[in-house]
Length: 229
Image (tube, rainbow, N blue to C red; front, side, top):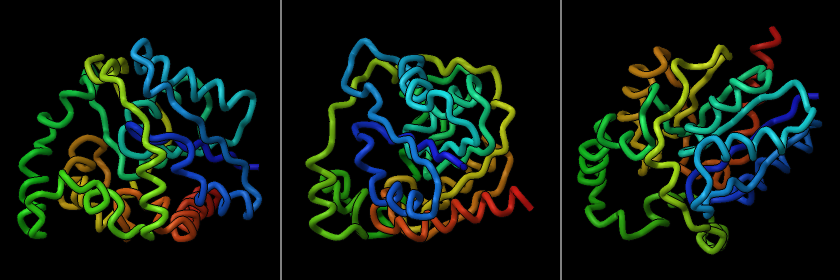
């Protein structure tokens, strides 16, 4: 049985995945979703990876799916446990030695985000988290998502990413075409530059696991089918 290991982003928690987890379990898969120690100032990237590895336990046949800031943790997990497939979902892609806090400038994120906001006529979007992250999520669910938000410690943001190279694991990248936080054109470039692959694409916002859980489950299963031939 395949087990999907779902790693949430910054200031978030395992709840983010609850709709996708239900879809995957209905299809006969195992699911592991955990709360990272995001609000713990003593925890850095190593402790984030520890939390995921502890949650995995002795499970095998793993597909690891990180979202957003979870992209800094997932490769560390892949170095420590056997993983069949890594699917980066609208995720930050680290470079060796790069602190997460420097990722934004190193990738040219600021200019890309400003340009996208201007094209969309959303100059004040950063002040409206629903418009930025959850614009295609049903209103009640989006409101609940904001209520579930957690504090995010700055501790891991200043730590150099410890790997010298990307782990040896089959890797896919799935970007969200309607993502206002990580604009699609920006992510296409970053994926090409940092992973040397062309990303796959799905419609939806940055929080596609809430807005399109069934479609996302279909895409993840499609990766499994392709991998198995």
